[in-house]
Amino acid sequence: MGTATVRADVGKLIGTMYDAACGEGDWPQLDSAGLSGPQWQELLPHLQRALCLQQRLRETQLASHCALAALDVMGAAVLVLDANLGLRFATPAGHALHAAQLAHAVPPDLARAVRLVIAGAGGAPQCQSLRLARKQQAPLALTVTPLADCQPACALLIARDPAKTSTSVPALRQLFDLTQAEALVGKALAQGATIEEIAARCGISVNTVKTHLHHTYLKTDTRRQGELIALIHGATAPLAHLDA
Image 1 (cartoon, rainbow, N blue to C red):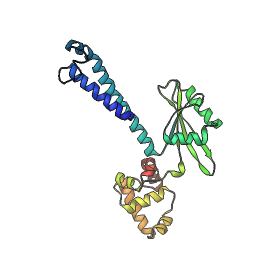
Image 2: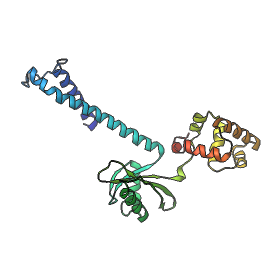
Image 3: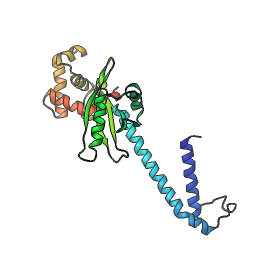
Image 4: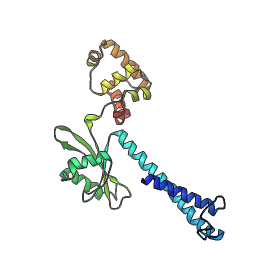
């Protein structure tokens, strides 16, 4: 029997007992258990507390699921490290990163960053950014920041792969009401292509690309390519792997 099934059964049991104690339900084992009405009433405050705790547990679990789902959408590997560089928590991607590169030896610059943010956790919030080298792959971009209200004091490590950051065409269309062609032009610009390269890649004229770009400026309230590119990266980069 799984943990979720056990929790559900316990929840039903507490609810049934609470109804019986309030006189609103049937508890078939009432007589065989040798409990009288007044004795059930004595249980009532404890059952109320159990129901409150159960509700708080559900809310905490929901918050945890939402947070992990958000991290998955952003494509981030997340780890929590203590001052001794011990692993306290990790998402699945974080566990994979730890096993591949951090389990045997933490790079000195990362160890220094973790200890620095933990040492300054009681004062002004600090954040450290660095790169983690990988064999035959582009370095990972790391952000290390203090983890609030954690005992012992720990650092939150977020790792992202810049090489996998792209732009979501569906998100561009939905956010700025762009056509498919306009969104594709915006994506290509955000990835560093020139107008001429976009025209050649899409099999259209340079003037057509400029027309799509002009419409995109109007819809996004931007005036220059640099301004548009910055807007696109800020709005859609975390949603890269949701692209169609």
